[in-house]
Length: 469
Image (cartoon, rainbow, N blue to C red; front, side, top):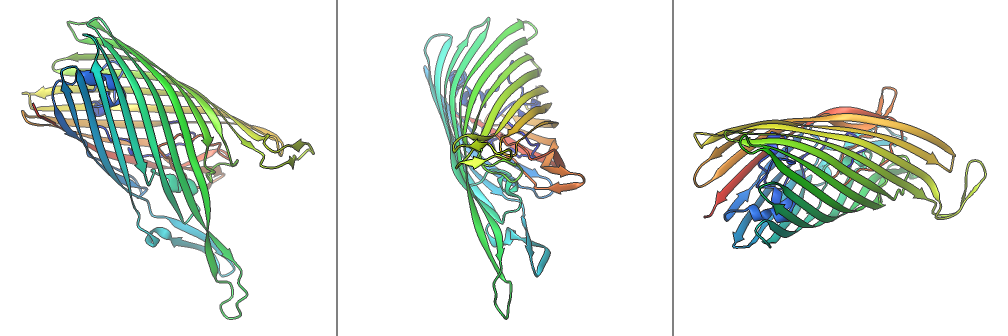
């Protein structure tokens, strides 16, 4: 997802099994037989047997900033020219402890820990499946559907840093149609997809008000609820190409192109941003090249992806208003416009040693994400214009181990992500308003330059694959 703040996020969306996680997630020129069918349903044609699988995942954000445990269970099958798979997952998330800051005539600099007021465990449910058919010797067609029922999205509460609590509820739908042409000389694929992210967020803020009680005086507190909706619709096309360079040595080269159009009719009014009620739209592209070698006893791969993105968000006047220079802004006209231009890069590299003595193998890899964007903001109310540039890098080294037995395959990957944290707004040495990330895009215009309290994310991922025949 897109980011305009360097948030420390866990692997909440890591619910599918994957073989290439330990080698950096390399995917352009190297197959991942576990996760490929959930990305392009037509790749389910490569299933050779009935297989049960599970991929338990646990992650923890440092300094008690959140954690989650995910337990998936699924099956992949093929019968003649028909293939398919289904996976169900439950997820338990532990929210970070929260503190609420109060001001009042008799309360100064008081922090109240809100974590004891309610259960801090939240549960999410995920379901995804695919179904396809081999329509010719070298061609397959597949359809995939995924659904997520969410009661928590990692870090959303820290986007409302001064609130007592944030109640979340929503769903995610993903539908995709995949086509695969796999010939000895080349492999080509195409995926059409539609994705909807729809969440509601009810943030409760403490409110103190004066009570002229002659005995107890000023004593009244109540919660004010701010209702927000986060809605994004994405339509896209993904194209992939791969061909061998040298069959005898196992070298391959590949490329990808992805185009996304995102509609943001509802963007929440997060505390870190300075303009409320921002709808908008985004055009995002991926251009990637990859090289790999799959030649026993070694699998090796490198991916390099360039991601240019253009995003436009704005705020509309709810009623007629007068600007700071006396001009009239009619209801419905824009009061603010934000223009984002991203130039992001993704680098992945990894090496896998095939099972030694057909039993034990290992992986090592790294993923590096570089985010960079320019923001041009025009405020028609004050009026004024400003520009802001932000950039950061996220590093994610990982290592993996695998055990191969006749009746089961077991894989374990540990990875750590650094270079992110809890962002806020920097005013000299003052840190205001912590923020975190949710699984949707964050297209918010920060009110000023960003600061960062660094954190790291440690993830443990286990893959179990049990062939039935």
